[in-house]
Length: 320
Image 1 (cartoon, rainbow, N blue to C red):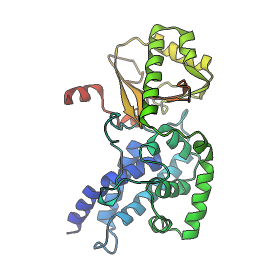
Image 2: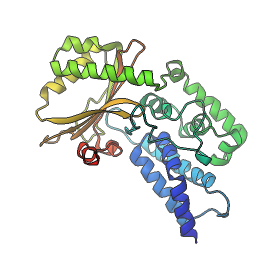
Image 3: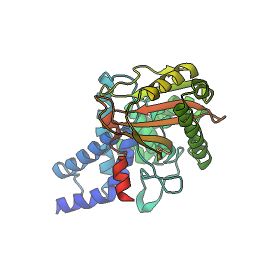
Image 4: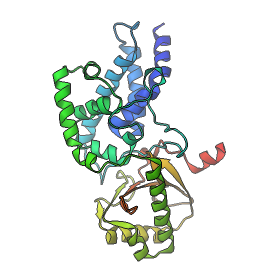
């Protein structure tokens, strides 16, 4: 009977828990592991009252596991810049695949909407928060939990939740000042900037590439120590343009590339063909544009474990 109840709870609550765990950790593979471990706990050490709704108990377990994962990650030395795992969020016309619905099929109406809360800018801003602050902010400002619901979910007092929430919002002040909500207009502007950038790279015209970049442009590359990537952030149009044109010039194999909606905005997804002799077989390149439509940041992910939520080219072709 218990196994059947857990299976039903798994089917009902898994999408919500996955969306929460992904936002909490910025890791698709981590979210997979956390959701799986949460339901293992439900089988091995279920709540005392299995006749009550499962979600509050599952959220508490998942968030506690997620906070432990964040603490372990912060203790380990990461090779080069850390970037969130890219996740596909559907086309501009379709709803995001990472949407975590509330009970009754309702979406949230929090301070940050669901699509914004999986954007690279938002997830990177969360890195400035402690695990506890991150959990409180997500529950209060993304999933629209009340103070009492947040306190119950995290096993905290109401006063503690309020204090933690205030500190978390204060830590997000820089993000809020330059906030970019992934509207249709921003998606179109990002796609146009990315297409111009890729065209300039293909032409090999360094000056043309530089002209598309904001004066304060930053490029981050996440190879996770698995593949070669820039170990430090690259800053400035000249340095960023030189790096990407050099990489493009040295590429010796063909590739299958497509612009897809990734973390709420258009990004380049590339599967390289042929033997690359230790080079990464895949790449996701996500830009962030400024108000003038120039590229203000470039996020390149090649680490294999970071790309588990991105379908391969041949998989997508097979489904057509």
